[in-house]
Image (cartoon, rainbow, N blue to C red; front, top):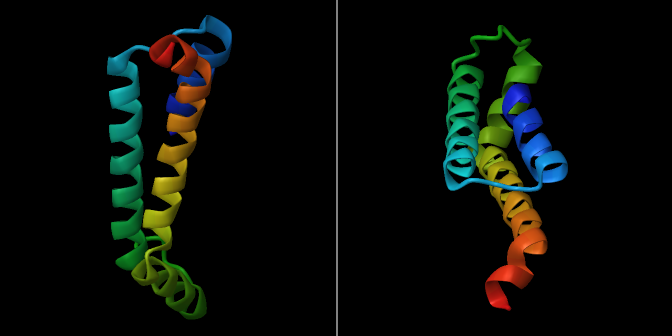
Length: 90
């Protein structure tokens, strides 16, 4: 995830160009990472204490992870729109 974030940062701020393939990879790796993190947290594979596990699983069952993913994707879409929106919409 850190490497993916660094690549997106470099392409957006340093190179100044985004390719559809890179964006697709970014979105899919984010979704896979969050999905696997959710499964591992719900199965308590990180061996959290009982109180930490109850708190974490409560947040996950309430949909906090989904909200975080939506916010990440919305932020990426907003950055892309801010950079390239004038080219698209004239």
